[in-house]
Length: 368
Image (cartoon, rainbow, N blue to C red; front, side, top):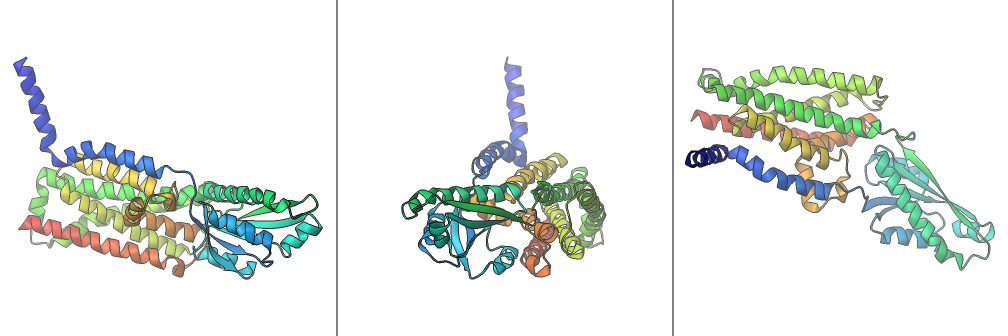
């Protein structure tokens, strides 16, 4: 029995001797519970909407007031005419547009019929349908309040139009997200495991004390993975276009440049992981488990970021995949150009520079 207990104590010491393994074991359940508890939220709240109300009568103002009062919508813009709807959608300012017909209340009072058009961004069909359903429910709830002032039976007809994805194909939504997740995981995993393998075998120290500068050593190891990642990117795009039928409505050049920049960020992130991981196993765990859940839940790939608590939104803004997926949706689905993704490109560029700088500094410390 004493020998058995000594083996148990030895195993505990062996587990807690590896700092990163201990951190993963203790923190991973906590992180998973927080992420799944807060991020898995299919409700759509606080959506900025635009309203086009040429009538400005009591009926339209009542409906607009109820929309703005609800937890689902914020009336952010008032448009003079429907012609500006596409522009505000392209700028990413709104998620839904509500367009009232001319002489809305007069039509209700005299003919018993009036029309409202609901225009939603169809790049995410599930979110678009949820927004339309919420708006339709609020509009229908206003009918009771308006019935007292209308002498005849009446109906308010709400018609729906989905921009960019009128057929509501789910592939339009998940393909950009899956592209971001695959490139992030594969690139970070390849670079982190490769360098961790050199460290684990002891050959990295020999390379770092060689006459070649550390940055050239690191670049020589990352360039092959950059080439392989570009091949993976080409394969993903070919499958998305020719098999899943997802269009590339925007510039293919900027789509390629954005993807290559994101690959560089992912490789640099893998390089940073390798500076703290002493073994291939720890590098693999940090690359896969440490990145897969945040990318899936906090990048906007599956769930709207606006619905999440503020602290999760802050974390989401630090994830490179969030900016990449946003840019790819604008390029592939919405057909926008460079000006629309300039912000995403600037953030990814800053991330690439920062990650490479921190990683190289970590390696230089090892030389000292």
